[in-house]
Image (cartoon, rainbow, N blue to C red; front, side, top):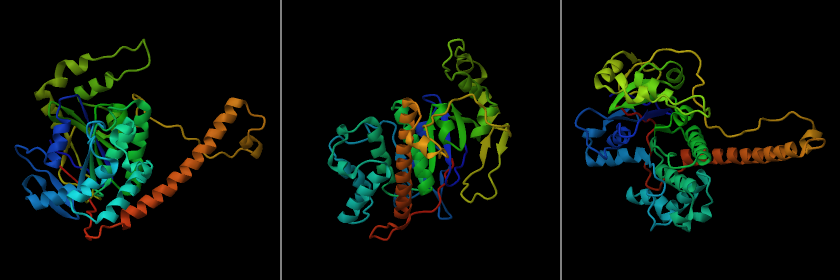
Length: 364
């Protein structure tokens, strides 16, 4: 397989359980040793081969790349407070003194929408969504360039999934992060990813931009995944035959699909590490095959003062207007927090004077 992740984009990786998605992410981190090939990382214009890196270079690389785990309950030590969890990466990499680490822990809590007063609590005091926010804060402690998200919302309910996805998108926009987002939920990947790769039996069978993949899927396995998406319609039965049988799961068919065509990397991209094999073609507008996870956001209203005050409005509508005004205040607070986060991310440095990389890319 071969793919590249341009800086500042989100690369989605989908496939069934056991196809090798998590194994691939561990190979990128070199938590597992690959049998062959290369994992290239663009560190300020210098291409680093992670597979052949020495221990010192590997330690520098792992400061640039961090991991968000699937299980928000098992990934946090029950014997450590949130403060100890957030400052642990700084201690391991010998970044800053005690005061710097304390300030960093407080700022990370604000960055993910949690109260810094909770730093002295233990993980069992938090809900699943709050624990995942703590995991995200820990991943951001070293100010990485590339974040590997291994199904970070699969263990959460739908409403909490929307909150975590919106948080990840906001952090990407504010801090310029690059994501490798692994999931088996096509709707989640459709919402967050810029480009999507479909994986089957350890091979990537199709790579395409998000709109093209859902509008014009080519490989039989991709067609089967889209056909197996459940709908809230009793008359529309699930079609699992395309996923379980036929050419969709034959290695020979997979290889033919990969060799069918190649997607050229953009000329303006300076972070592309390898050529990307794919089976995709230009398509039309985005299809409506999948529903997207959205949160209700009221636009700016140009109504009269009487309408804004609720005069002559039904009680239910008046409550909605009041809720909209509350969301407007929350949005203003979120914008102020984003500005503070950008200043902190760009100007805050540890007393050691170490700097972070400015570009992230990987390929295998």
